[in-house]
Image (cartoon, rainbow, N blue to C red; front, side, top):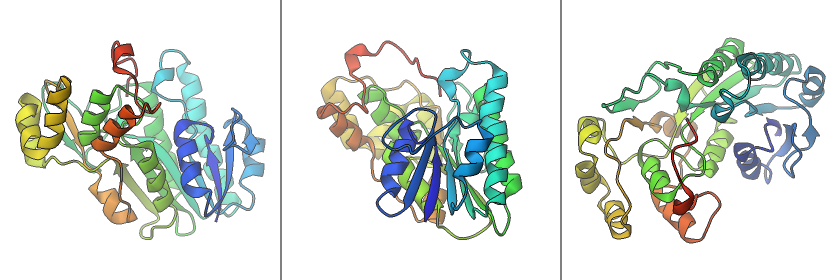
Length: 297
């Protein structure tokens, strides 16, 4: 399969390239040069996109402005990059005979669906309630690609959960209920290239949670009790290291539908975070250098 991968120089784009390049021809497009990028072009460059989609079987669209850009880049530019460029790419892909389009989206767009003081079980049935321009434009991009889906143009939207470097205690805990490894994001995209079924499908992708829906009330007020019941070994490891536990867990992302529909199985849970921390992986931030939650989902 020949695949156009936008945002191929980014962290998730590089992971997707790594998951696909051994079995597919992957043409990466990004405005920043990198070994995974063949086409140096901005995602708003219509002429470059028109050339890039020629002879392509599928498009994976990861290029976007993200949460850290909020407040630094005008809202109009978010609209241009995240929505208008997506609409252009979809149109050009369909015109060129591309048969599948995979959009990388985000669980961040649930926004106000998560309420302070409670714990929300979140799956595909929960309606997004965006807070920021980032959230709103990603939700608009989803609507654009959904409208384009047809029997000859299959569309898959993957709402990836929290996936960026953080201190080990945060990352390992989030991996239980709202996080995912970049490599698992990549294999989910690979699976979305070939699964069958309805022409439009949308899934939440997250690491498997040990929690149950019925745990939500206790997770909001007494997470230690639930951790002791569901993941006693991890809790013991936290206690041994003197790492703090969250006072409350406010959400659980349920990615079970993606696993079933895509035939996809995430491999990297909280134990992998501890291993990465032990070997000094750049995927995990040093604890001593962490001051606060400076990266908003």
